[in-house]
Amino acid sequence: MDFRPCIDIHDGRVKQLVGGSLTDEGAKENFVSEKDAFFYADMYRRNNLFGGHIILLDKSGTEAYDKDLEQARAALAAWPGALQIGGGVNPENAEEFLDMGASHVIVTSFVFRDGKIRYDNLDEMKYVVGRKHLVLDLSVRLKDDRYYIVTDRWQRFTDEELTPELLTSLSYHCDEFLIHAVNVEGTGTGIDEELIGILARSQGNPITYAGGVSSFEDIETIRDLGAGKIHFTIGSKLDLFGGDLSFEEIVDYSRS
Image 1 (spheres, rainbow, N blue to C red):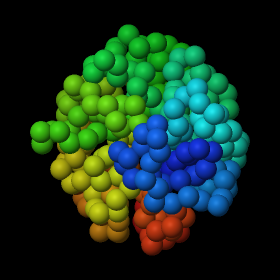
Image 2 (image 1 turned 120 degrees about the horizontal axis):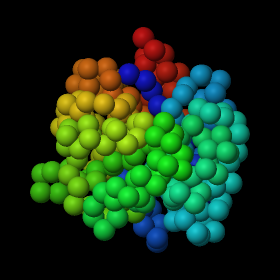
Image 3 (image 1 turned 180 degrees about the vertical axis):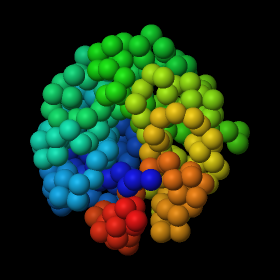
């Protein structure tokens, strides 16, 4: 189990937002950093942390997205070959992100269209970047006591239910999964143990879980339920982002 750090960028600033609150009109902010994305990426480099993700939270084609992209470019230059990037990724720009220094591109909306998995789009992404450079974001929200994959900044439900079988099947098409538990993302209220149980029953690719981590007990639960094979990330509860969990202690703990 590894600690996978994050850099979320919104309107050109490193921020932590409450999951599911982001719309074109704005979002509920937990934290807005005075530091830029380069600062965080360089810190991750100095701590030799691989597999972290940069997420561009603004809508592609907007002025805000261009500011996000400028921050991301600096972060990738600080720790080339070690960070993943997502947000507006498609076959037209995916290679550019890899050329900027990303180890992987993270894709959701391009693959999940019209409520379904578009395997033709998935195959196109694989052709452009290669399976080993592709991460699928299968972030989910609860509906009718089931977990459904959501797209478009977590606002749009697909018809695809997240199951161990789906994860195992999709493992043939990508290198890793990134999964946000949107209902608890950014709340600091604790992890979604039921979802982690689903992830633990999959066979295949590495998984990074995000959402609600608020204590070392939560991390231990992820380790236990996931049999040590589910990686984790922490956002607003981390002291780097205004929280009370020590970054240094988290790094030490994940290596113990």
